[in-house]
Image (cartoon, rainbow, N blue to C red; front, side):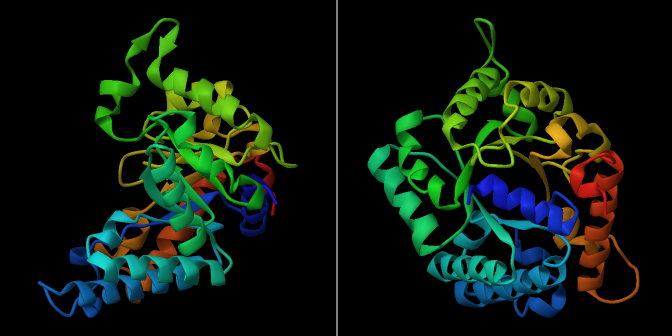
Length: 297
């Protein structure tokens, strides 16, 4: 099944396009999971693995997907890489779609090795990629697109200095607008039954006007919208980033959910704070896109 079909079906089942990012900063873990302020790689990797699995236990009934960021695992060497693979596997066992935030991009032979490591060895469902090296750097990933896998290409990212390159003017538009046209073309042959491609785009929730423009330029491209919550993106400004029927986008929140306990002093432990933050995000998105097909339950 096409990745976008799988994703839209999961959004319907859970009644939300909320995506939980797993960015396990060791120093921010709850005290009960931090046995040492200066841990070995093995100790830290074990701690972040436990943390992420407990997050998954909380959010699996509430969201369609998670997005583990490999950098926070790789920081602890091979033990961290093993923890990443174990967390991805656990998330899939709990019925979640796993989008690996890896932002890879390299020449053909190296890209082939990356694709094999991510889609075979780590067995994730989707990955984030840089399109900067052009279509031949993406070709190995397309080989998996017919197997229910897919990828999200960086088009307009959520960080403030993205404008340094992505907003540069070209003849007839901008760099990000040119990339959007390429993504639209690259994904044209991979559109599923739900009307969206397995080739997606990363579009920052912090730039709602550009997101609306990019939705018009890429009507069949699923958007991964980072920047909601802690980075300042607002749900009510994202309405126009969704496609027909309110589909075609997943909205990521990382710190605002997984470290919710740092601001939420309510009853229960840190997992209760995660649960409340996830419910709040679901309600926020539902209010922003009231007529969406997934929002009719």
